[in-house]
Image 1: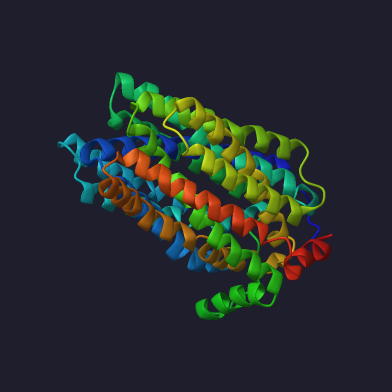
Image 2: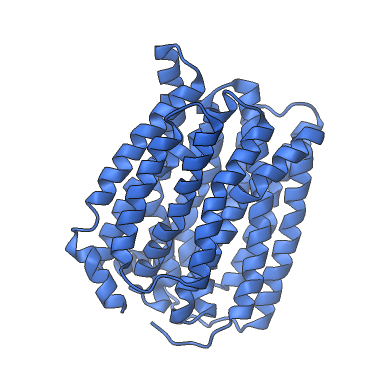
Length: 412
C-alpha cells in the first residue's frame, strides 16, 4: 500500500458534507416509510420502495468503480450528489399536486438512487487518496458515524417535523442538504490535485481488472461472499423494523425508537474513531456478527417498545465493529491503483443479500401475518428473529476459514 501524505483535514470537510447529506436522506427515507405504510398497510410495499432505492446502487456499483479509477473521483461525487436531488424533486411535485401514488414514489427514489450510485466507490477511493494507512481504521469509525446520522438524528427530527407539518417539509430540507454537500466536495476537489491515472484501458478490461484484484485473493473473495449472506439476514431487520413498530405505535414513537436504537452505532463509532482496532480483526468480526444475530432475536421477541429499543441499541452497537473489520481486511489487501474498480465489484457482490432481503422480507412478513391471522408487525418480528438465528450460525462458521484469517497476517 502506498504511504502518501495525509490530508485528514480535507477528509473531515468531505466527511462533514456526507454527514449532512445522510441526515437529509434519512428524513426522506423516514417520511416515505411512514407515508407508504399509512397508504397501504403493507410491509411488502415498503420493501418495494426500499428495494428500488437500493437496486441502482447494486447494479451500477461495478461500473461506478471503474469510473472512479478512470476519471476524477471528486467530480463523480459532485455529479452524484447534485443530480440525485432530481428524484426527490419529482416526488415533491407529485405531492404538491395531490397524493403521490406508489408507482410515482418508486420512480422518484429509483432516479435519485441512480445518481447516488456514483458516490460510494469514488468516496471510498477518495478516502484512500487522502489518508495514510495508519488513519484508515480511525476514518472508518468516523464514516460509520456519518452513516448512522440517518438513523440517529433523522428519525427523531422527522418525527417532530411530521407532528407539526407533513412529508413535503422533509423533502425541502433534504433537497437543501444536497447544496451543502456539493459545496464541501467542490472545496476538497479544488484543494487536492487530481490523480493522473495510468489506467487507460477500456471499460470491460478495467472491470476485469477489478474482478481479478478480488478473485486472485481467495481470502478477500470468501470474505465478500460470506458478507453477502450476512447482509441478507441483516437486511431483514432494516426493512421490517418500521412496520414492526408502526403496527402498534405512531410515527413520533417510531422516530424516537429509531434514534435510541441508532445511538448504539454512535457509541461504537466514537470509540472506533478515537481508538480504532489494533489487532484480531477476524476474531472481532466473527464475534460482533454473532452478537448482532442475538440482538435481532431479542428485537422481535415482544411487542414492547422498551425491549425493542434495548435490543435495537445493541444491534447498532455491534455493526461498526463488523464494518470496521471488513473495511480494514479488504482495503489493506487491495493495491491503491485498483481500489475504485475493486470497491465497485465488492459493493456489488457483498450487497446482493440486501436485494433478497428487501424483495422477500416484506412479502414473508405479510404472508405470515395473513396465514396466522396476526398483525403485520408480528409477522415482521417472526422474520427478523429467524434471520437473527441464521446470522449467528453464519458468524460461527467464519473464523475457522484459514484464508480469511490469513488476510490479517498479510495486512500487518
